[in-house]
Length: 283
Image (cartoon, rainbow, N blue to C red; front, side, top):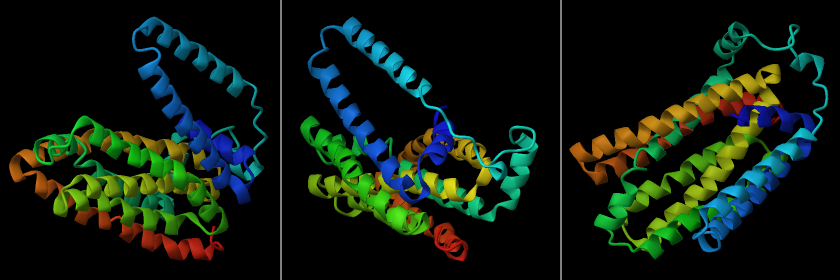
């Protein structure tokens, strides 16, 4: 719910030349806080659920109070509708006319849908076929988190200095290494390397789509972000269910293979976006 508002706010308060870098700092700090909170709740508060719930409630209130202190700068006239906001009919008309946003939606939807296709079968494969223990599975998950924390600042710098679209393309290619590892090289180390690659890809994708929209969508930024995130929810529900059904009929290996090959199809919309980005001077 809050992300469309955050995307609009960050364009107002972060300077364009350092926007992706500042957003990466937010991502890294949030990731570190999540790791610390998870560790604390698992180790210190395991036997006292009420204390854990109370601490979480208090921290939530503190966060709300800190956001309430932010004063958003006034938006430029070209980013504000005459009526004070963009109506749905206006937004849909803008969406139909904005080929670049359509290509962005198509590329990210294709990539993330097919990357999520094996999400529900990875645990089954890890335990039933690869015979991994809980510690190894935990390390694989940590590889994704570690990669995201390490590469958020790198992607932020790259996006600020260059442009978001090449980052989307590079990340789409990197993300396909995870299903490839499970398909052709089932084992702990290939799986961990694939998970690390997915962490790299997810960090870049997240920063790239928000920065691309912040530079190209004008006063429709929050509306376009909402449309984008609605599709995130759809594929997050549909893809794992479809993957599980496909695994029952065609087998786990077929799901991994489809995820790998179809993930590369996301490069087509991203590559089609490159000429329009160059036409705007790389932004």
